[in-house]
Length: 497
Image (tube, rainbow, N blue to C red; front, side, top):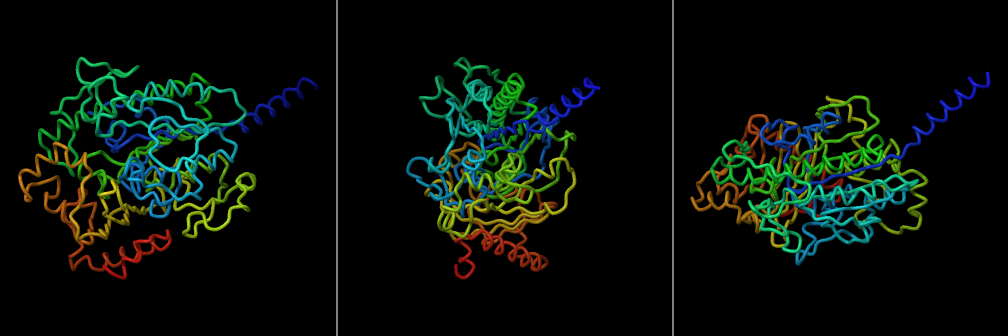
């Protein structure tokens, strides 16, 4: 009888230990990557590790950034707030000078007060550091993802009573070779080492034939464009190898079975027609999530999610938010919320409140209800690029409001110089550019209304169509309501201009 009782006790104890397992989190963010690789239906771009992650988790086929600009998007990822509310309107670095409000509470700060060890590795690109504060900065060249993974091993393997949050961000596949200090060789425009130069540690470069790449419909199918896409593919394959090594390390350290692993990009590919725009090429982004505690795997979810949903999702998994989206009492006490005076960011947003919501509950659901709309908000990229846009995007229809539509569309310096764009630009305003022309890309209407079922690459603006007048009015109402609900300063532009 004693033996039986002891066995029952040990079983109960083991169950208790399992239930009390550390709920670790890894958020892996790439730079300027579209959902256009193996798991997303492109057999040309080889991503075996990402494909395996999708098979072992949930792939969101309708995931969107809220702004296709690096700094601004990362501020949304780390705050759960649209950038028009968190104040990070554009790039943080150099003379661009944008940063978030100094009384904001960010994801890593919430997690640290929830009992987490936090660390970041690679690209950061937000400010101020006092707001986006991590407990540890792990060194690593952001074009060298396997090296970044290796450098993170000590943090992941640390024997600690606390769970961990690792925020690891590559510069791949961002256009541009990177700084001379970071790169010991001469890279091409997507950071790939040129033949005969020193490569990245642990990386086997995958070279692609431009004739075999897939050209998305928002880009022109030209030899120049194909050459750039082949270079981009090579950079994505490097990311995939970094993902593979990081997952190996999590398994080697015994942490994989208790780690929520999220893979996203800050926004779409760095090509005109995508990055810096709120067209589909810019907004659509990859999102693969593996919840270790779900039984159902290999889910392809139809829920429409955006980057304002990431922070509340992670915080619910970490038990910092409860199932109703409220901060737990212990976290509130640790934060000292009763001592926080005034509003969180000057726009009536209280601590623990987000513009998004947790999608933890739909990770095992292929079909969902109530996840049928996302919104987007872009204002700047580089400081010279003022072009505020606001978007309401349903499953079929999408409305873009170009608030400064009287201005020609401004170009990021690297996108203006992109060979693909220059080749079409030199042909004149009537030259085609994907589903658009050079002229229609630069000179935009106040409102752009698209039927994405019939026109997925947004070439036919229906805003002036009398047949769609009622639809346009309905989406305008939704768009204004979104701006009012999120305290968007640009909502006043409905009254003038």
